[in-house]
Amino acid sequence: MADLFKANDIVLAAVEIEKRGEKFYLYLADQAEDSTTRKAFEHLAREEVKHKALFEKLYERLGKVEMPARSNEEEFLSYLNALVDSHPLFRDGDLDEMKDLIKTRKNAIRMAMGFEKESILFFMEMREFVPESEKKFIVQCIEEERSHLRQLNEML
Image 1: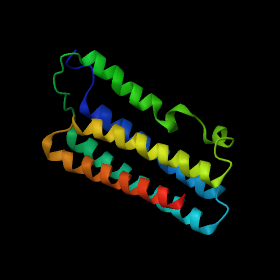
Image 2: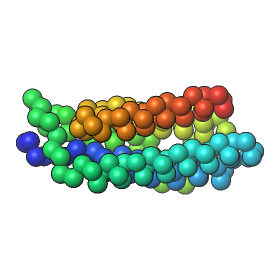
Image 3: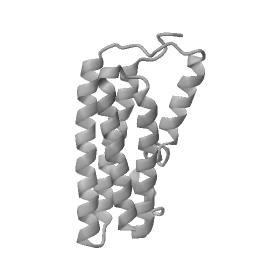
Image 4: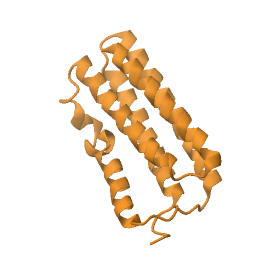
């Protein structure tokens, strides 16, 4: 079981979350009815691009680092998969299918807040599986996601 999954696999999931986040925020920017909201979503899309680049570099540095031994690694893998599968951008599929969910500015912002909260949770768990020397990068992303959550809350 010890080589069932690797730390860099989690980093690849983080890269995918950031890619989908960029696409999500650009979609919301395109749907925005006012320039202030559009600019805010465009800013968040650029932030996702920065995070994606950070995780891609982290992936290169990690190489084939194995996860630390766990008493029940299979159970943890199931939990980790559930975190990814329950993330709004993975769960809701194609952005065009979200149109009904984000018809209003408030609904779009609330969905974005859910995206940020799920990302924070994922990154908090991810932090436990990277070497000590790399944790600061994950913490930086967590703090930025928290900042995004505050910005979105102010937009409401």
